[in-house]
Length: 327
Image (cartoon, rainbow, N blue to C red; front, side, top):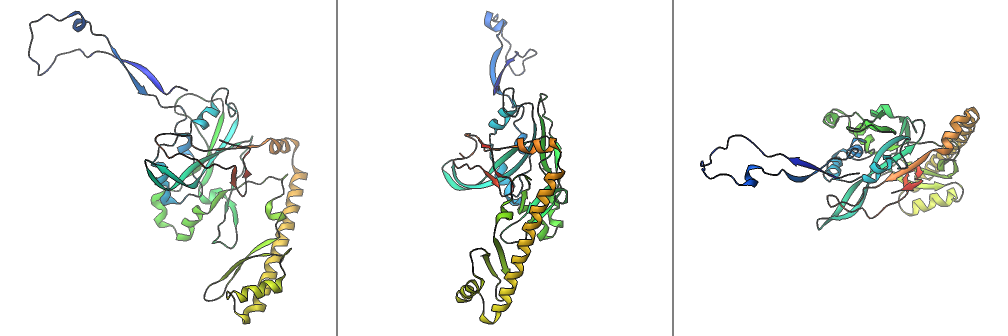
């Protein structure tokens, strides 16, 4: 991939203004000036690809801080070139950010680093989005269109590609956020791209933990109860001893925990049953597609125009799990 191109600059002809007329004959070099050469930066074909991908879960007021740097995703661009591992494939791209402590131009601070995830699949990995956070008691799995997100085809500005690229886009305008309720605005910050693999048991199906958010004054009790390892009586006494719960609320708290455990066990059972049924009804073609699906996680490459990204990890999120390869 070329980063520069030679262009000949032809000599300018025509009347010269504000110059004194000379009777001296021009020299050979003046009469026939040679065109000089200069190097101009040539924009790469997919240089803006990463900027077209919506960075899911990033706070709206942090987006400008991400785009202020000229991040270089030439590793992603090269993957689509002839000989690259994404060349000729059907690929779905979504973005996110990871906060990192980084130094740029002798200034060290927390920077939100853009990440692009490529999913190689014959069909969209999901049409849903997960909404979850520590502050929310329950997670939500909703159609991504409710958050004005959708997969759209990407068309490069120059050369045609052998690959089929679809990007996760969001049509929510930042200027219109002021017309939304704060809770709806915050939902965008809690979004996670959702993926469900029917052949892999979900972590929630295996988990024996439940998040407890017991409403009480002056502040609610927030804790995690493991029905496999925790004894409810001892657990409740410990909460009271830590002065997070009054003794007169002990029975109400225990009933609250029991109800959450019943709900979690029921949800786990339903999830396992739904997965079993989905596999039974799945065509052989779809089964093969799930077996061959691949996730690639791209970090920006080192560039003088952006902070150096030193920390990299293979984990995408709780739904996608780990990438098959991270670069």
